[in-house]
Image (cartoon, rainbow, N blue to C red; front, side):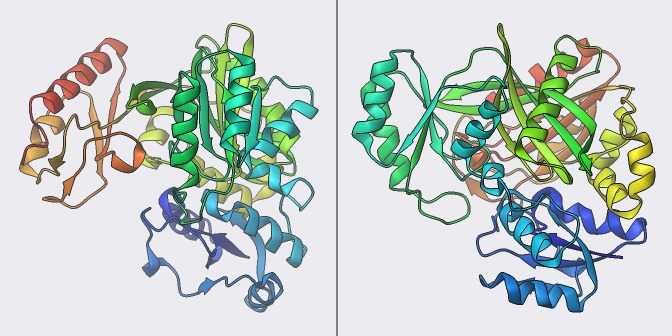
Length: 407
């Protein structure tokens, strides 16, 4: 068995090792517009195929290599994975509704058509039309974002018509994180509530919930910046409601095979879709997650590829939270310098310290944090007692304010 991994960047870089451990061969396909700022391990691949736009030619190359399954590892690979699996006639998500698994406006339409709650939204290249939509609704704030990007890339919270106009111009005059120009802007109703994300793996329309997290954000320069996320037990408040909604979203979007990363706002009126990606979630720490819930999304995806029947037999089994886990996104209050190993020692000395991921080499100068692209790294805290996690989180933020990045 050979698996084609489309865009093994970010969390996708971990998939080759998981497939190898389960006896599955693999090749890499690079789409035309991957996010090359994400980590990548070219040494893991003996076959690294650059897709230049000809699906028939790329599919023929994969067929000659004996590829029997295609998976999207990163957001940039979602549409190409659909096209290649269809061209090869192998297990995938098909081409029907494929765009709704990538385009955020089409995504909301598909979920709404399935009878699920969604935010009010509107898209246009015209600043006047977007301003008119927001003004007519008169329900502030509103959120503006590119329709094809990911993460917090140019996700801007606007409190007035003037801010909408400025945000529209900023988005339209920039490129997304994949290097493509934005030719339309999506405006959405601002949802109030507790934001969650759910990582899943699906096979033949059966969805296994690997993990449920609750986001906490802060607003910096009008942008929503990820602060930290807490891993939830399925018994925690709201978790089951979110999980049920996510299963319906996956069905509505036709995500029948592969990984899924779905973001939900749990409002007073119930769950609403923010967006869903038919790929691995970011920020994967397999060893820590396995310690906390017994499995992780990367290995679960490899399991679904290697042994579909066994995967399906246990897919409905709920995970059990063995230890609490908090993922803290580092936020630099000013321009700074990435510390060396000794400079991180105070962080490693925190009682609940689990892991540290630094996004740039030691000594690199970087600008203050305003989005995920300017986040210097991530600290994972794990402990049985929530109070210990909270105390260490506060201590970590105090270290940042006291000059952790002063160099």
